[in-house]
Image (cartoon, rainbow, N blue to C red; front, top):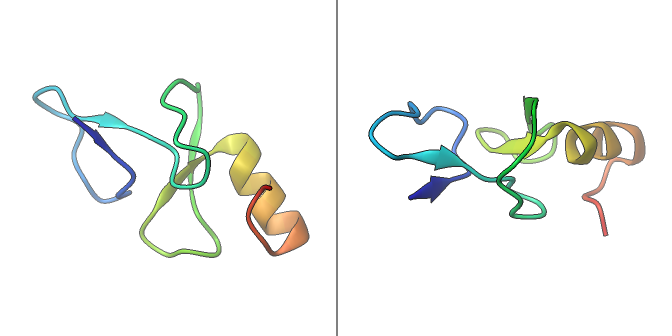
Length: 56
């Protein structure tokens, strides 16, 4: 099971996925500055913070 909710505890087979690009493998996760409560990969989060919109 994959979730993009930042508040979900990752136990029992629950894994994180990026709210923006849906990728599941990254070393660092961030909370999305544009969509509160969602988690994004570090690259998507930095793009959102810099450009104030989601990655294309």
